[in-house]
Image (cartoon, rainbow, N blue to C red; front, side):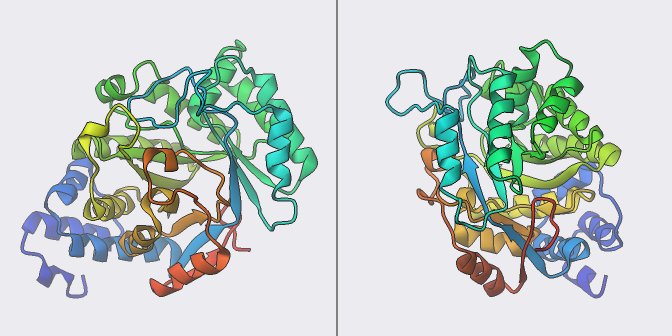
Length: 366
């Protein structure tokens, strides 16, 4: 291990580290051991090796913006600060004209992707969303449309009485290019019932992404951490993702999302700190040996932590955003107006010792 073993006094960790360095797969119990016993320096060294194996010295970003059609939602997850009821002064529900107006704000800007996700609206049907995407593509055909979490997709397709394959084909036919990773939360069914009762099940979330992958629609995956879950729950979550990726190779990126405790029903829990963020990035990079990219979503972490995460396995900082998302700012994240210039994001990457690479939504360099 090029001398690395000399710095490890735990025989079990020494064996795990040797397998990682050799390019082998670690088991769930070994992943749990890394969470529980590995020091942050060791995790950083190992995650850095794996990160370079996947992506060399590159750290990626893109030019993107979000459209969040509504924060009205049939679900009321305990961790959510975004959900509002109809009539609440903080609620919004954009029609097609308002969405087109939001799109036109970027007409003169060099953006390559629009990310569309929001609440699960109680009455909007599949045709509403198909028309939305079709309208976006007609206005700007070159824009990559990454649209609708599995939770939104589940509702809009189920209410039509279609199979998941039929519904996803219709969305793709109207212009959906890929699917974001939201709504995964934590897959353990008992925890899921506690923090988001009645929400799309973990099995259904995985089924939706697997169906999309089989149709050639790429997606991302997320995990909400830092609430009532244990390290075992995190490993179980990532193991389910890893098994699906073994079958389909359809996930582009994994995005750990830290629970933020402002303005929601779980605010009494507090939040984990930066050390836990970095530990989580590193273990994710080491365990998810078949997902090519680990994203440090800077509107959630803040710029400085996202920069640090590049040395703990992350290789992507997401994009420029353009002050178009409220999901994390409403939950108390540091960036209340999430917008970053290309110059700043490339500076953050270069100061961390990596080569900034602008990418498209499929991670092709631009």
